[in-house]
Amino acid sequence: MRIAAVAEAEGGGRLRELAEEGPRSRGAVWRVGDLAGAVADHEHRGEHGPQAEPRRWIFADTAEIYPALLDRGVRIARCHDTTLVEALLMAHAGRFGEPHALGAAWARLHGRDVPADPAPASGEGAEPQPALFEPDRSTLPPDADPLDALAEVYADQQHRIAALPHPGRFALLAAVESAGALAAAEMAQAGVPWRADVHDAVLTEHLGPRPPAGTRPPVLADLAEQISAAFGRSVNPDSPAQLLRAFEAVGHPVPSTRSWVLQRVDHPGVPLLLRYKELARLHSAHGWAWLDTWVSRGRFRPDYVVGGVVSGRWATRGGGALQIPKAVRRAVVADPDWTLVCADAGQLEPRILAAVSGDSGLAAAAGSDDLYARLAGSFGGDRGRAKIALLAAMYGQTSGDAAALLPRMRRHYPRAVGYVDAAARAGEEGRLVRSWLGRTCPPPAWSPDPADDGGDRSERAARDRGRFTRNFVIQATAAEWALVLMAAVRRGLAGLDTSRGSARMVFFQHDELVLHVPRALAGDVTAILRGAADEAAALMFGGTPVRFPLDIAVVDRYADA
DNA sequence: AATGTTAGCCAC
DNA sequence: AAACGTGGCTAACATT
Image (cartoon, rainbow, N blue to C red; front, side, top):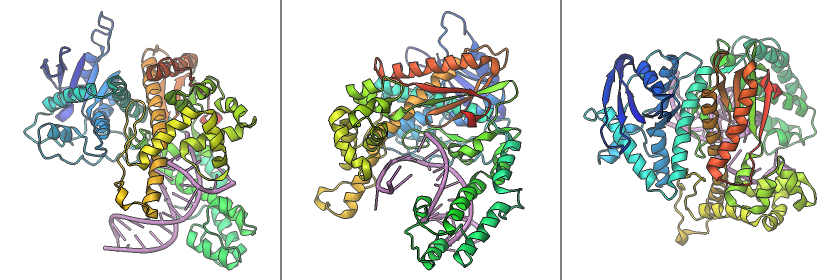
């Protein structure tokens, strides 16, 4: 059963049941004063009856409507997010990036002027969500009824999906993208358990006591002084331009001040500078100011942007959740009597390549826990060289050791290399490429013009585009595998006994999932994860011999995973 | 003063 | 080892 839902003023809303025989047929419409309560009622109605199939809620924008439901303690199992699906469908049609909010989709259906999407709500910092639903940010014109428009756009999307070359795959993509939006809101609500006192201790240990705002902590101030002394002049180590001049002046000209460049320079200032760069990064990106802004009441709440990356990976808005340095992960500590279950899909991208390309040799290697070790035989027994060769094939590396290894890679794993080579060729020729489930890359910024070819700039642009599309088919498929995994984990968690507390997903990072779990449930959650990984592989690739092993660690501190 | 760009480093 | 993909974020610096 499918139910479209829209929020209205003061916590109310309207619901419409979409009849099974055809999404265009009109079902009953309810106006409710308490949308969260009504959703909860319908979510659980008939849960154990003969039709145990859970509802699928149709939302225009899950990120807008679901946080307020969660604040009322209402969780739902499945949804279809028309905004996210519209973006996927438009990209598939070669119209990546066009407006995809409900108002835009409705306007396209009716031949109206297409409104720009609303600016995303900025949830800057760790402030709690408002208690009621967001004010109406719809781009629908006043003469369009939001609930009618939602049902209509949903029906249209169903038809467009059915007309695609692989409707089943795309339907799975639409489902897991939408499930991702539910998971993102749930993770934002749960928050990552974060010990501010431990974080502060890490900072103090590396930087000295917290300085007044806007001034360098003692360790950095001291290093800056020593650096100036080493160069015999006043240098701001935060200024690449000043550093370039300082190295020039002491007879060590450098092309840049990147760490790996400086490492090869023999000058007493270098070790000080490398230390300074490392600590300055800690201080500026994840120091006390970050702690004040992003951690409150023992939780870090990243603002995830589902589908925020062209490849379908998630992005985050503020807080840098996807770049938490290893050193700071010591502050991620489970609550007393709880534990963290950390799951990491090992060697995900090469396994994806094995599955999508159908290369039998690579698939055989991907049937083991260490794919690279199985490849070593093709590279004189050298696992390291095998890894470099495979990564080079997927990333389009053309220089260094990797280039020399590619011919051998091509000889031993022809279909795998052929798959990414074909994607690269498509990119160089200005064509689009798609992930396994149908996520489509943006069109090129340039138009390939054979008459005006040969310029260095266009050749270079074509090569860059080829590397992008080469990687896209792999990275985007890996991202959707992770989404399928996450959706399966959500379903598993929903079936757990909650009498001892509820296990929650709290952090997601590309190919890694962290759950905060009552200690007594750690075993159940581990089993759910293992089952979800098998389910993701089966749903996406059927009977592939490729395995997708999860490294699972049950730990008190994330840094120990 | 506000806004945009660059260099650099963090994550996967 | 450092011309290999996707990003976010900050301070310095440039522009309006």
